[in-house]
Image 1 (cartoon, helix red, strand yellow):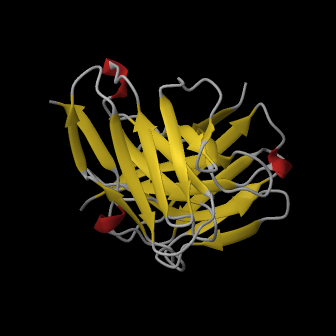
Image 2 (cartoon, helix red, strand yellow):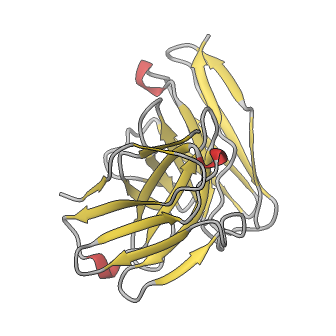
Length: 107
Length: 120
């Protein structure tokens, strides 16, 4: 299985900050990477696909970059609604593994 | 409008069997994969397996192979997750999710989740 390692595991920030979450794959996955946001008691929500494609309806303050093994999710000008847990997921090969998650909380 | 509606919460005893469901609407079932994802209490997301209802092609994560069975009915656009003998360690929320497009395996629509509690 391809392993995905996210960093940091927890990130504290305030409204208005710019934050970056990293996802590293154990082998090259080209750009077959998605990012999700999950809030407590809710299913995940797709934010980014194919490393940098913004899902319809997702605010433009979210952006993704990367290819091969190293990827980032950046949130510009954090809003109160953005405090949540974020997961990356590779879909280069079965099984489509998830990263362990990054919890973004209020400083 | 695309929707995935999952069956309700279940409370079971160890050794019992269970089948939970995920009914899709607003799209053609034969064009998308449906995955099952586990989330244990306070933990992250785990990809269990995926099925293509059009021909029932099913792939399992090695961690879940032999532990669960995934099936689907293309006529009712419903996917299922089955346990023949539950364990306490199966206690979790289980999500179904639809692939965003044919031939791709990231997910744009998710069910609301089914809480499964296994306790004696």
